[in-house]
Image (cartoon, rainbow, N blue to C red; front, side, top):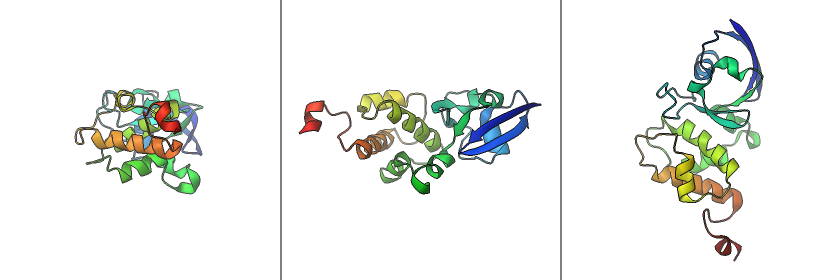
Length: 170
């Protein structure tokens, strides 16, 4: 067993884990963070995406011991740590724009979208599609997911996402 200390959704955690335990298993089985979904166990689908020290990672590809000393944000922590527990703007945009069907990929899509918008607050449709490339949805065809990310970006900036600067400055 290996001792780890980390912060998960704002709460300090100290625990003993098997060195081979994946972060996704730790979050779900030990901490009850079941919003972090196990989709493929091969890092292909992105359903298990979380933020590790502010960086979007697929938690099925990270050992729990690698998160020692880090700060982890899960889909549950996204709303809990945002503006008094309100839905994060990306979560709200997914709700408003119907950016889900079965919902299985939604936590990972939202976490990846948040990271994308932190890097690029006003992405074009192509940039959104490229930024979500490692996250798979088997139901929606991505149209409403892209629309949700655009909506979240517009709400944050007040500008039309992906529009040339001349159009925005009017």
